[in-house]
Length: 118
Image (tube, rainbow, N blue to C red):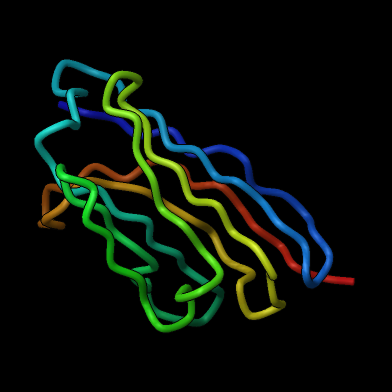
């Protein structure tokens, strides 16, 4: 069993930056062999895959994240990060991390809220 705890969200003005963190814990918290992903869920919208990173640190970004967000990982700390720059109001959402693939038994944390507003 693995649990994820996200942190680092907050209220930021358009154009600002935030760094989100995701810490894995539990008996299966060794994430080194798994691809890890950040998702986000905005009010009234479906969950959206933002970015993911493989065990060998190959990365993929969704259209909204390309050029502005950077995903990284620290396997020694069982942690995944999302550096977000040039934030826009449409980035406002609850951000969640998990390991891939997502299945019906995927463990989701509480997420961290990001609000971009002037």
